[in-house]
Amino acid sequence: MTQRLDWKRDGATWPGHEHSRFVEAAGHTFHVQVSGDGPVALLLHGTGASTHSWRRFAPLLAGRFTVVAPDLPGHAFTRAPFASSLSLDAMAESIAALMVKLGRMPDLIIGHSAGAAIALQMALKGLAAPRGIVSLNGALRPLEGFASRFFPPIARMLALLPVVPQVFAWRARDPAVLDDLLKQTGSRIPPEDRAIYARLAASPPHVGAALGMMANWDLSALERSFPKVTTPVLLVAGTQDGMVPARQADVVAHRLPHAEVARLRSLGHLAHEEAPERVAATVLDWFDRVTALPAEAVAPIGATP
Image 1 (tube, rainbow, N blue to C red):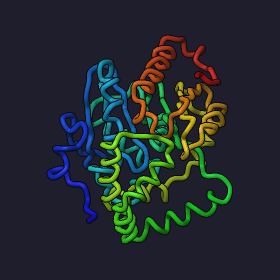
Image 2 (image 1 turned 45 degrees about the vertical axis):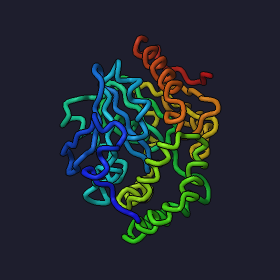
Image 3 (image 1 turned 180 degrees about the vertical axis):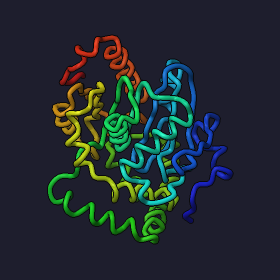
């Protein structure tokens, strides 16, 4: 049976619940997890995920950073009051408002998939001034070819039908449906993480938010603005990613003034979930290097092993 997630019922068993709090900002009641101490690292999950995706990654940063990880609007335990709050602009503004409310401005923003687009939008709009942005298999470019013309109108139509999230959530009860979706990521994640995705997929509001993001986002404008990004950016690309091909990182890197590509062999779209230590080491080594260099020296465009 499908049912929305409820903190009173589900919170006690949610990964990282000991770090959870609820914060009112930008008309949302955000579920956010805060841990560690030091400069602030903001972690932004991707479409259809939640704070749980950082369950093994966040502790690796918490020894050096104050780690802030929210559920995006409409996802998991954060409610979206209206559909327009799911646009890229609105999400960037609401996350920025959350950080103001927390009194913690990010020195580092790490965004997975769609979360990377939010990170870049925050920097472009002057909503944050991080010293570095990390894109983990970032969904930063519009769909290409026939899909670019066909999918957005269909997504908008589906998002307008209240019954659709219920149907999607009902279908997700079939283990084969979720297994097929996870297979497409190219990642192998532990059974306990798969169980969390199953709970998320069975929550109609969560499914509705994922559809709403796909319906409301236009990455064309973001892509045109890439040359204006002055923040150093690390583009981490899993070579087995079946959702965002690793080659896209090279295309994006040549349009961002201060970008570097790090390919992670044998890892998929959920790289930070399947190999958190490896991803964290890549991120921290890069951040230490770019923050130690004078600004004019931070302009590599290339690839690391």
